[in-house]
Each structure stands twice: as structure tokens, then as C-alpha cells.
Length: 246
Image (cartoon, rainbow, N blue to C red):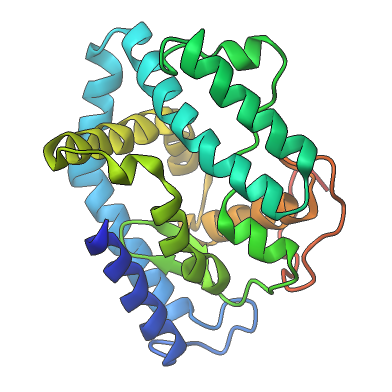
């Protein structure tokens, strides 16, 4: 966790220092971002994607579902905290109830009983919380290993890491093993989307940038995974490309 925090901090420092900038007002750090995007894409192709493909093809589906549910249940803990920090008592309470139900009736989170009971999953993080508080997103920023972000979300990343209760798991070997499994599971869930991106996007970097910017803007405004607050984030400017939500 400390290593990943250092990666984010170094990327933020490089971005703020004006490293590899361009004249594009929508993406002033494009030079730096494209270099990081290329690095991440290469790492994914040679290491993460092959492992995730094997994971999806060979591990029984019920085991994959259990892994996804388990770490999703842990994530609901931090999501509930951010729901309350954002002043959304209903969502925060719903996430607390999800954790309670899934941790007990769901066998420690292996079963997602909460969703079947109608308790919506919200996936809130501290970057969204800062946006709800009126903190602007700042320029788009691609982080090594972490991928798409922006200045605000990068600044919030260490807080999200310390808010992840798995980061306190001992012994450390179990924590590290679980973190690797979680990463592989997340990548496996994105395999189909990744293949579609490879086939459809003329410029993968621009496609990912615009999709990320629009989705984060939607999350801050309350249109995605958070339907109760329409306040918006004045610091997030709409991306130029059209999407199916427009």
C-alpha cells in the first residue's frame, strides 16, 4: 500500500510541476498522460490481461463470484463512510445495511444477499466526496498502475487506501495475496469491455479519457450510483465527445 501511495504521489508531483505538458486546454498534461497510458497498456498486455484471462477461463464461476462479492462487501464499508460524509444519510445507511446483511447471512460477504434484498450498491470514494464538497477535479491525470484519474482524485487516493479495511489485514502475506487476487478479479471483469475498446476505439487514450471524465462527472452530480443528490461538481467540465447518456 505504501508503494502504491508513493506511485500516486510521484505522478501528482510530476503533473503539478508541468512535466510533459501540451497546449490542449482540455488535457494540459497530455504528453505525460499518454506516456503513462502507454506504460500501463503495455504492462496490462504482457502481464495482467493474460493472468486475468486464465483466471476467468479456469477458475469456477461460483468461486469468481464469491471473490468479487467478498471484496465488494469490504468496499461497501468505505462507501458507507463516504455516503455519510457527502451528507447522503440514505445511501450511507443502505451501505451499512448491505455490509451487515452480507457479512452475516451472506457468509462473510461471499454471497450478495443485500442486492437481492433491494439494497443498492453505491461505490462511493473520497474523490467523489471532495467533489460533493465543491473541490474541482483539476486536469485529467493518468497514474502509473492505477490508470485514469485527475488531480483531485489523485490527492484523495491515499485517503481511499487507508479507508480500505483490507489494508489492515494480518498477516501481511494474506493481505498481499488478497490484494493480488482482488486486482486480477477486477481485470477479469473488464476483459469483454477491453476487447470491445480494442476493436472500436481509433484512439484508445482519448476514448478512455473522455469516458472516465464523463463518468466521474456523472458520479459527482449524482446520476450514477448516487441518485439522491443533484448538486454537481462545478470543477468538472464536460468532455467534448458525446455519450449514450447525453
